[in-house]
Image (cartoon, rainbow, N blue to C red; front, side, top):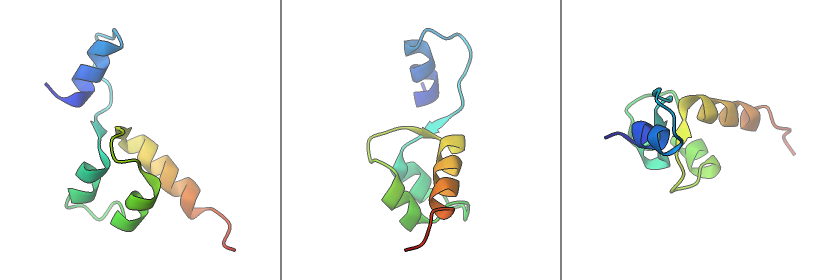
Amino acid sequence: MTEAIKKSKREGSDTLSEPSFYKWQLKEHNSSDFNPDVLEALLEDEKLYTLAEVNKMIQTFMMGEVC
């Protein structure tokens, strides 16, 4: 059973939630969608993230003010 289904069942929902991923899964994915260095800096190791959450975190980070 996938983490998204387990999480959905724990929360009492009968519908599938958006898939969630650990930092290591996002870093190992062979996609150029995410910079692995940015993922390392922003994400916690043992926390699950949806792609929408990661995209929002990266967008906020990239729009930050440069010192």
